[in-house]
Image 1 (tube, rainbow, N blue to C red):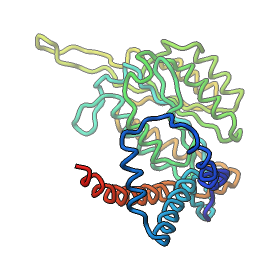
Image 2: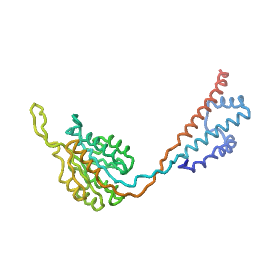
Image 3: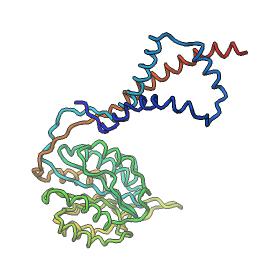
Length: 336
């Protein structure tokens, strides 16, 4: 059905009539603004007087333009038929680390070497696409933590926001505690048996005002289960600058002990993702979590229509202005 978000805007419809009633008073006043071409316009009105029928048509056209403008201001919208949303599912908040260390290139997609963040985007995006019936939210954290997408059934938008995330948006350090605290704040409004946080990081807590263990205790009291995932390759041999090879540990900064403690305190589980296959297996395990019953909800799709009357008003205004311009040209030529 058609509805108007701002129906009070229709009270503006009589405004042209009120203005017309005030015109005689305004004409009696002295001009406050000098218009060089006023005499030309006045001459046009006097010498090109239209017939009474044409004048009425001109007035009706202006009235129609005004009605369309007011209709656009009232913000019309089309409300579709009610759509029943899934009543079985989970509330999943995904907390993804985008600190500076996530740009380390120790992961592979096929034979292509990529950064940790690129791999995470690929696997997590596929995980989100499988979340039919689940509400999914996205939290990004580095030095600061912020909600990129609130809890929603719109999985496509969450995926897009994840793909658009770049390293450095939230700072170079890692604030695991703040990320958990912010996620708990958003999840505590949901059902006690339906609060899940999946936290993915490749480092240790180096920033923020809340310790990870303290945030985990708060999550446990609130009923939020946290599944932590540590990302980073194991020790590997790399080619040295002057030839030869040397052993390095890309995941040396990963604080597995803290991540495991967070999971244990909240009844979740800690996973270690050293490559693409392991990360995909982790999300497949999370897929197996038993969904829980949710309250039934009804969604009515809404489509905004303000641009339709606005486009009509602009088109009619253009035609009216073109008509007046054509009528003025002969008058101007006779003056030369």
